[in-house]
Length: 279
Figure 1 (cartoon, rainbow, N blue to C red):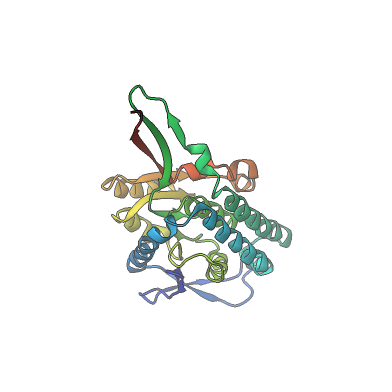
Figure 2 (spheres, rainbow, N blue to C red):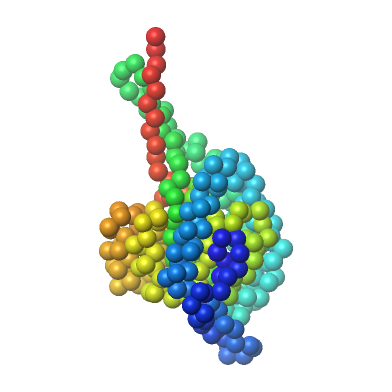
């Protein structure tokens, strides 16, 4: 798994065996995250938050562009991993290319969404007031089962573009592709701890993360209703923002909606500042 900028095994030593979709090829052991792994990932994300959120928006955009370059360099490897996960060659190539484009799109938004969400508010009195967006904190993401790569990137990019850090639970259907994506993160300029990738079983780890007091919000994709209810109940004690969505695979490829700055808006808090004016 990828935690705090380093690749780690599960502290429990447990693994899940993953085969190619056709049953051929080698059997690979993918780490199965435990509660301790989840706590370590939240700690890494919380430790990286101040450094990442204090960077200029322009610099965050530069780093995301660098991530796009690393994904482009590994595009053939990503496509091969998607094929092993069950896609045909054409669909795998399309998803890998769409993922690179998605990173470029959010890199462009990094220093522009503030102008859309900020406002100068009319007030009656000797002062002026304006509202600006700021990061929420640590966000837990349950990536969609499919598309395993584009869904992973498309769900975490709005979070980190806004200056948040995140803990991402990868697709259970194709966890290998998430780890290849983690290799691109490791070779980019993204600071350690900004994105933390865990593999394993959602039902085991997600409710524990939902109850963690350092977590500010949860973004859940393709989670079944029973697990979603458990997570919402666990998150209620600390009044977390919880969003549960089940987008179809085609929706992730819709650039017009999937790259909207409204995706970023879900992961910011609006801060209003009052300032004296006049003599």
